[in-house]
Image (tube, rainbow, N blue to C red; front, top):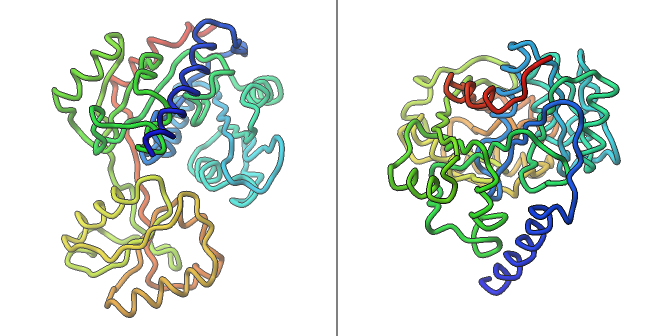
Length: 336
């Protein structure tokens, strides 16, 4: 793995070198652009943060547009997932994350397009968006941005992180020198050792913890809300297809106070009826009262999942505190 990681490091380094020296040019649109991204291969909670950011900006009087690649979507080219008023897509057409964002935001335009520049221009010109949120765009430097926000999972040690495929880094950790804000997700505190490490990389970096909370636990079939107390000492089967399944399984363990039976799938996995039946059978065989999954996975389940009476979905949520809001507003150009 190490030789391949070295090759990957060189290739990403060359590309960034060309952008840093403006040999490769970035294209701007005439409204502010906020890039939300990772320097690792997923698992940081980026999607719920995009949702929280878009809703806050809407409440602050902006008309945001979210542009996204729409990973593993069935639609081609440019695809409008949501206009100002309604969702115009299905999870298969848009991809799971854009659909999830569309389902949890209001008055927000969402466009899936591999061409981020064209998507941003469409959001501004056709839908009168006055600010653009570029989802998963830290490495997509062709679109000029006013703010680069990067999320880092609290369980990841920056000092021992390696580049893909040896580790989870998408590029050299020195790429954080481009970031304006680094938010350490799923924690309410940052160790002084890690804070010093990140600040040494980028002295101008705004660094903050980004605690995660459970917004709701609900039954997919009945929509009944389940309280955390209802899950204590319960044997459950947790399953997911996300970037960092260990974090989700640990959340379940904290809720139940019992180590769950677990089953992980590839990120963005589209579940078949066969997969679902196998999970139900595994839960029965291991004496599990509930099957528990993420909202992102629920979007990818077959329709028959809605008839499974003991399938629970956990929705997570980030609250953007006033310090983070102030740091973002401080980087944005003055409003006209």
